[in-house]
Image (cartoon, rainbow, N blue to C red; front, side, top):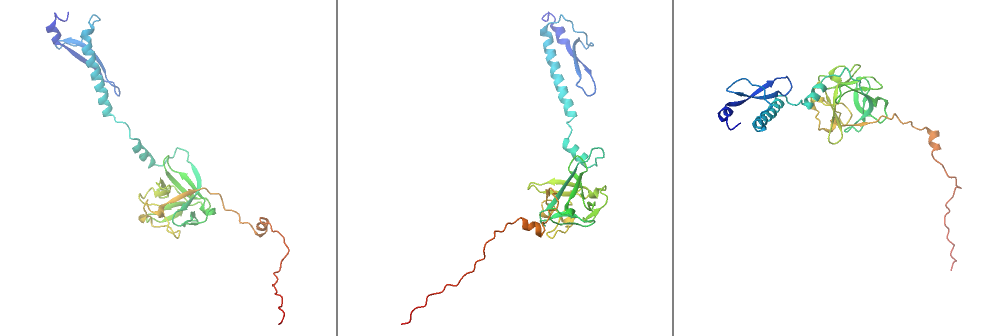
Length: 261
């Protein structure tokens, strides 16, 4: 049948019908037409030898179409999504609240909020060293408030740390950055590149001169266990047991007098 109609077979060309459904790969409907005629219904009597090349071409075009649409619609960038969402305050999710102390690497003391004044001179367990940390977004942005003074740690436009009664402004939001040496740095959300830092004397350092890799901007989170009670004199004596013994007196050794000759 195919041998007798050689010229007619040469004029047979495949037709492609596209079902352009948005968002899906188009369906390819293959039929045969002669001399540029519209596609006709494929008869079941057509042999497998005649349909096999056309079906192969159909599958190749379908694969090519799917690859092209995949290139036109790239996968979403998750890192960019996290950065965009982390830059906005989350007003819907429930905030996480944690309590701990911040140990300064340079001063060897803890950060304390005594009102408007912020310093790193508190001993372990000091009531002003207890900090309440509230999450601002699902990322690592937090607000830090003194539990005793109820003042938030904020940074003004000159880079100075001050305490404010309200922490709603962006000056009072810090981004936690965990460093390779297991220390934590706190970068201000409004002033990028400005970090919370303290000197050896525990005084706040100018934020514009602070850097992430400097010791002055490194902190360690420590659990707050409260101030340990100092035992008085009566309780201190109960901790020791004295063993009674008779007093001894050292006697001076005397020598025998030698006889006179």
